[in-house]
Image (cartoon, rainbow, N blue to C red; front, side, top):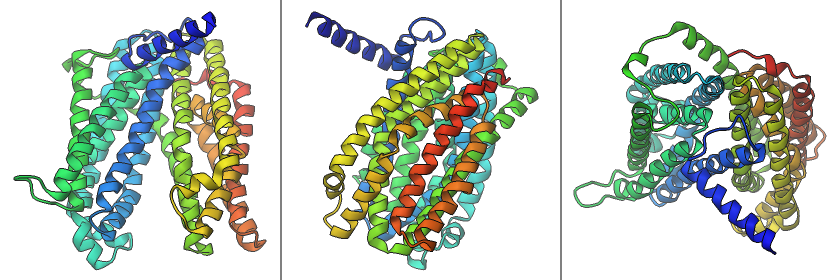
Length: 468
């Protein structure tokens, strides 16, 4: 009984340290403690991103169907911004973590400046397109004339201010690489808190502020993210984290920039391969009618929430790998991955049991349509059957990214998604006439294959020699 009290007390002690970010040494001491201290704020950071999307849809759904559709179409375009931001953020985390592990804080600061500079350049190009061609963009995405007339302002503001999305991603990746995961978390708490407050004000109007409708959601989001970016920059320039950026660092360093681009290309490729495969799967699912598509969509949204802890742990693994390789401790880097993978698999295994038993009840929280519930529950159960592999595979793949080896996961994704998952889904669902079950099975089997290939290649140890 006494030992249980001690364990609970120790848990809450570590929880406070994780959220406050007081502990920043991850190349020595307990690996289990390091995983916990990094994972907790990263998990909370991921949950903040989910809340962001839900709040926008919640308020905008009260405006009109066109307003919701506008968000969907614009988000499809914003995916390109995310692809670049995620690719650059993978490179940022890997390079900053390596420099921090080498005790080269000046090098980490220099890399941070090049990441931010590159992000601003890319965002500026996207902003010009978004500001001047919002109607054309929505038209290209298949928007009806009345939708374009009502919603182009949303597209214009969100794409025009995409620098806030880009920098929020990139600077948080810098903090994660440095081991300052709690700062990244608080940046999103600030961003989301403002978005929740400002959304109804700008959408429906308040006092002297007119009702902007769906455009108001973009204004609120941009202000929220922009404020968080200012907070991030203050932290960087005032040295409230491991990284301090001075005016002397604000110069172009070609070697660092080229290295950053080289590492980021693999990350961009990974994201685009994964995203495009989901688009094609959605197209296959649409062949079976709206009820099947709705069930599939609900099941995927449900699963996204339970993937957050696994994503958080995989990000922790990436930071631990980068920092420990920088500290010339490849064995500790490897041990960190095995331990983190085990924790992730345990968690995902627990969640899979819940989904396998209670899938119909969970789907019924979102719909009472019998056909939608049936297909949603089937999807949840089939994909949950491979959850343990998913949890382990996510950590392994991100470990490569943390080492700066973004090419290996890109090839694994290409093989498993494009050469295996999509053909299998198409043939089994449409040619062999198995139906939606064929798509669900293809998703699960592809994730299992990713984990198997990832483990085989990880054990070879080539990632330990990657130079960034």
